[in-house]
Length: 505
Ligand code: FUL
Image (cartoon, rainbow, N blue to C red; front, side, top):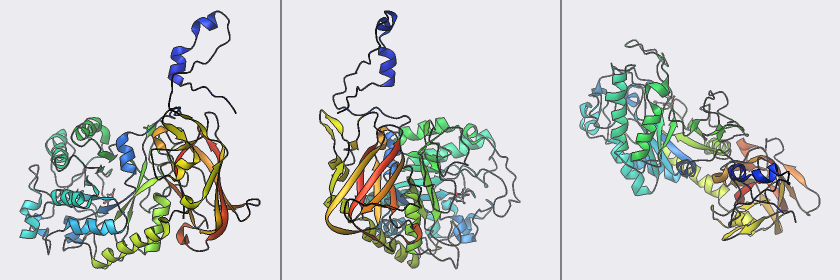
């Protein structure tokens, strides 16, 4: 067996035996006490709140507001408040129940879009629900009702508040930031210290969809204008687990609105990176900035539009595979209509989506297999790194190789042939994202092996990677593989690979 010394970089620098070198003696690596034998992290690593956020995986986006009643996607900002007149009391509980039935674990409600109309009784502007066109509108308070419903349903929740404000005459001046935007963020933070994400959209001016005859706004340096580091600190003081999306720099836009992330998708990125590599991240990035994919489940826009259709469950499942299954989160938009509730077709489709997810990705066959690996890290006090950790249902235990080993093989064997469609891998990202390349093979006899999904770039894993064995995300359930053995070969990794879960469906 190879013998390895645990040796962290910093400790190594500090403890380098200067005197031994000076005396011309051989340089000996000194081990720091590491009773658990946990491997050294590969930097950068996520904040705890970023891990909690990523565990939400699949959540809903609800675009509802003034545009629901005007049919616009980007309101002008000069709409009369009286136009906001829901035909029934808006019902965030119904929104979230539908999302939950789809297998989603949370939701984000737009409470102010670029038109500046606020869906809560804010003190910062008169352009808000208190001046709405009917009683349903005037009694609307989306942040309050959304947060309450989420808590009742045990779901995560957050708000989208547009920094860009086409209604405010102060927009573009420091006064807008101080007297309007930051106060709005503070008011919203008060709706719950348990918020999981605040969505700060990047749009900050320009003509957008329809032009804006009432106002011209200048492009501004967002970080400086909104004093983002300061805002982030303030929000964290009130809501410690609230990830600041987009402008906030704690989770990145995946770079398209079509519901896909790159097959290669690093959660790491350079702070100065533009948006061009957002689908893929950067293997050498020194900023933990994981990807979130925002996509529409309907055909006509983010907001509800008359005549819109809803995508098929199969298409939504494909999006899931290409986002959650590629180390991103999926925030899927389902817009409430003029009644302030989701249309029946949306509710039905969400249930179908949930049923599909359950039928396809819940009966984990890895649990019934015998697992062998070609290398296991030496156990430490209170910690093992055995293959059994991959299927124990515990995300805090993981399988690992010894330091310095960056390739490995994991073999699953069943007592009888199985029908297999998906492989789901999860890295233990608390110690950094590591795996760079792997393959999946199956066999009926344990001797001759066939590579599966060879058309898919099996590169990164990250928080979660799901590979359809037929190589076809659009029709992933068709043509299953029958096999008695499944082998995963890790071909390259930044450091010893750490996987906490391996599932096969
Ligand atoms: C974009 C916005 O401009 C759209 O209206 C929408 O809210 C989308 C989710 O983000 O940047």
